[in-house]
Length: 520
Image (cartoon, rainbow, N blue to C red; front, top):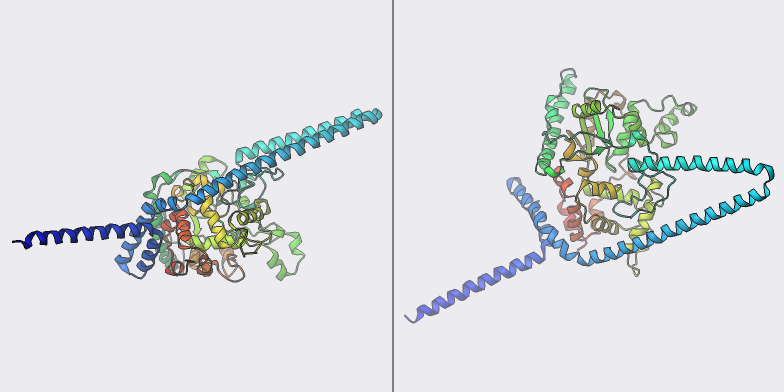
């Protein structure tokens, strides 16, 4: 009888100890969230079937629900530094503006004094010279004002206008027309298109293949099954996000004279240059160029699609323009196949880094990527650093993206402030345009052959196409582990959150080797 209270007491102590242990474990796990997320994701990739799918779904939920809260706490100091940088940039911009205004006023004063001296000493011809000068100045002023007004309406700035805009995201210092051209050419500007809700790729099942050869029918049918699954996955992801289903302007190549018509939305660093050159091939571009006809046949073929002879990306926009009539344009947009090309989001960032951050004169010059390089180094490289490279490291570049896009939530945020690494969903308004031809750079050969055979693009057969997404013979995707080994797991996690929708819509994931080889 005397043992019963003691037994109860022991049981209570045991229960309390077990409860405390559980609470302590949960507290420790919460503090190590990014590490936990990374490890769970790594180990989940070793599973197969339903187990792996459930683990990936759980991984996504953990990132969405808990990741942002953790980042807010761990990045408090970085936000304070960012606020200080923004304040310094605003002060610098104000000083530069005042300096430019002072220089302009001084130039006006000097011009006025010169005119006055000429008036006093010019004799009988002074009045005529003054009149010519005034007429020329008035004409120049009218042209400048007209160009500025047109540019404001189109969202661009004249090439001659020097503007020091805020340096955020992708260094959009001069809001020139898309894809490198500095001219306000209507052919290369985005046009409004109607909203198309997700359709699960239903248009692909309605393609009539009866007029194709048996061999082409077999290939097209087999590839259609793959492309339909991709379209269905994107439609499923967009259906869960109705706020992203909004109409918007798009920069498209309108190849609508063939059947079925094909509309292509170029995305920077995803084979866009290659595709634009291939569209030029369809028009037999430069075949009768008098300058090229002077060259030997072999050299003529080599130089046919060089920028020196006008083969620039905006030419494809000019040669495949949208219909001028809005109703006809809307009808063509609905009835054509809408095509987009994607690749692993991290491989694309590496490609953008190599192209824009590791060259002294990255193209196009009007985007001033060299200025962005200097800014990144100034902000993220300590003064006592042993790194002496004149270019930002990949870690510095990645941190710039993480910090500068921290508060981006809408498509307009990315399109306004970023130039070359806008997410796919924002660049082409994926959830508002119902793309049904979703090609992937990882399967570029069969995907490209599908488009060529479906569109009967004879000009691109027999090895006449070209692909420029390789640099120095090495694909950026093969360097993913090498570059991301410079980042911590937290940086990798933060970077994925910035492009999370691209990962989910197009079925990409981070391989275990990336987490395993992270800096920490």
